[in-house]
Length: 174
Image 1 (tube, rainbow, N blue to C red):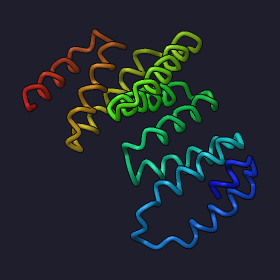
Image 2 (image 1 turned 180 degrees about the vertical axis):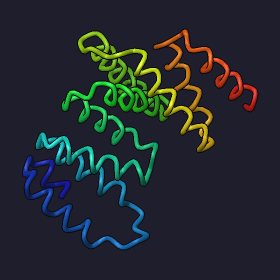
Image 3 (image 1 turned 60 degrees about the vertical axis):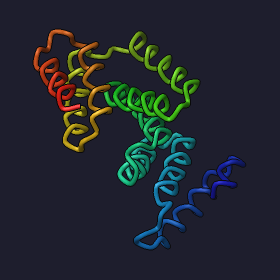
Image 4 (image 1 turned 30 degrees about the vertical axis):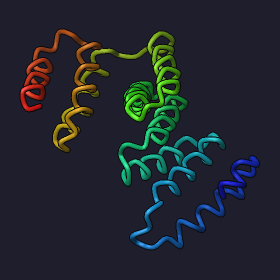
């Protein structure tokens, strides 16, 4: 399936990968890669709804999958869902940075700046969405991720006092 995708035979690639999906066993270790590749094939076919479906499945298996998070964000962007796009692409940039892939992180951050400057993004709503994601990260004991998300939420809406308080509590816990 991956070879077919590399040769731009997307219909064939999807057929093969879906066949593999139907045959997987419950404790298959590479399921996230299978879902990612199905998402990428659908992304390349410009079937962004289906791509989102598979990228989300890949992320459900491995939440720190930077490439899947990035393509999920770009898929939302292509559908005009700028807020969801921004949040996912922002998270991907941070993941790339944490994984030591600084070059990709910088390219992704530039794409974020382009989204902000070229699209109508409601900064207050976006800050609230990012704060909600930070609270989820906090619930999952992902303190580093929660800090990055809360700091971005504050950057977008510095007037939200509760975020400062939550961030202070995280630093205290750390």
